[in-house]
Image 1 (cartoon, rainbow over the protein chains, first blue to last red):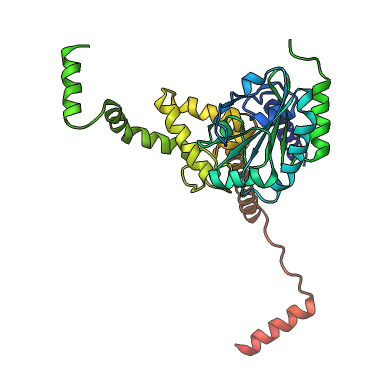
Image 2 (spheres, rainbow over the protein chains, first blue to last red):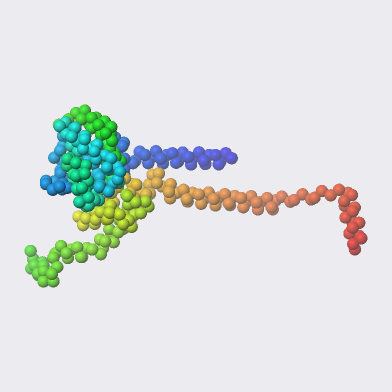
Length: 182
Length: 157
């Protein structure tokens, strides 16, 4: 029995070694995994046409503010319908404190998206990612997904699913409390 | 611009083909295969067990366009794949890279086969060794039984 036991011990040790090596050399993690591990991830460029027309929404021009980038779609029921009033209410409550809420409508029809915006009376800027390039740049899997970008333009939190009032306030308050960008 | 280039442009214009169309048509067959090859290695992020090449979803369609555009911009297939891995992690690769812990996917089946073969060989060796070296003990028959058998045999003959 002894040789078998020795082989088993060596096999388990080898497996543990491989596991440790893998964890130590994880370079190929996506944006979500990096953010979850507390790594600093620069928010990808985001310069998209607004849903209702007008000048593009350019994330870079809001450096120094906390930006909440929310990916949504009108067909995303019920999560997007649940969070829309939360986002609108907090946009109105926080905009004077240097917070920008930005909606990015993806994989959607323009008319359906416009109706969604009107139905919920959304006043924060909404852009459309018609080609999906920004969605992939941000590593979006589905909707809704929300990225909280700090004043230095780094993604600090990625939230999957409907944003609740508690999540919004806790995250934004934390980012606002940090040292402003120089 | 050389005379040759001008002549070529004039010929294209006469044929009703713009230079960009010509470039697209010229690059199309090879690059479409490359687009397919890259898309086939990527997992569709909104599907289950479908590649970007096979998925009919809008997201996969947009990802195929992105692959095509990045190749057209001069990126290599490896760079295009890297772009997706940087955003979604190695999860997006349908076939995990052969290094680190992922090696187990390739090594464990091989190890299992080797261990199985070794176990089978050991058992066969043991059985054959035992059969050759150990003779079965004769059945114990008492004297009364032996006498009875002898009498039965004599009676029979």
